[in-house]
Length: 312
Image (cartoon, rainbow, N blue to C red; front, side):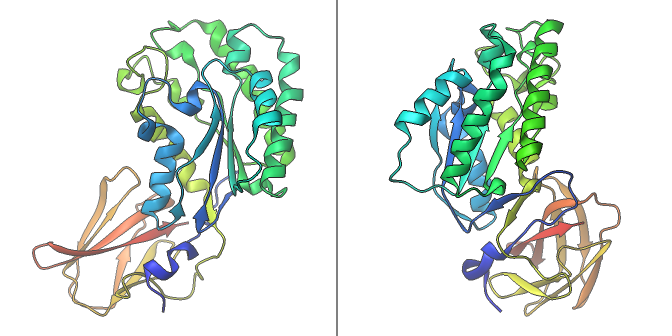
């Protein structure tokens, strides 16, 4: 069997999630299109959501380049479209494009009727970039800045944001493009100030991290893990099968294991179990479907090996 370093890209998240999956190559090259929400106004570059997303993929074993951006604060769909039509670097190839645009159409009071034609043109260019593969484009919903100190909870803002997102979702579904709804996360901003940046308007690094956690379960890599076959996912030592798993997973290894811990995508420990012999069965029935990390420990815990565990 192959080691993680040789074949971690074989991982595919095949969870029964409503909506299109996002195809990720083992070597990722991402272009992020948008406005201030894409470039992360008021946070460091490494804290932008595309940069955090790439960091998460690297943690899963993907060889991901730092994302490129065509995005500027204040851009409307018309601004973004004009730039990518004339300034897109044609010499570089991308296998993933993200689109998050529209809040400035709303903020500047533009006619909402102009949004859909512009959005479709942006999507058409994005599809051209990725060879017409709709699973290599993802569209994020527009956050709701009404739920910030700047927005002050004005209901009309939320209503208009909803109208734009309704268009965005419908168009994404028509194209078969993954649509990631993060607006509900932004609407926690007034009750949870940690989700708002210091400028009182834009998302904080913590909110962007929540967006990434909403995206991760939608990704798939190009080759699946056979559900009825053991796969070595770390250093040729740990086997989990089936993977994706149901209510139980079987663990085996060519080293001694004293206990295992399972962590969710937020790094929270959701299961701990002592291991008295191998192979061993782990009961997962109380866990929700999703992606987890299973770590196996020896002795005092100073030695550990970890694998990605998927539950469906």
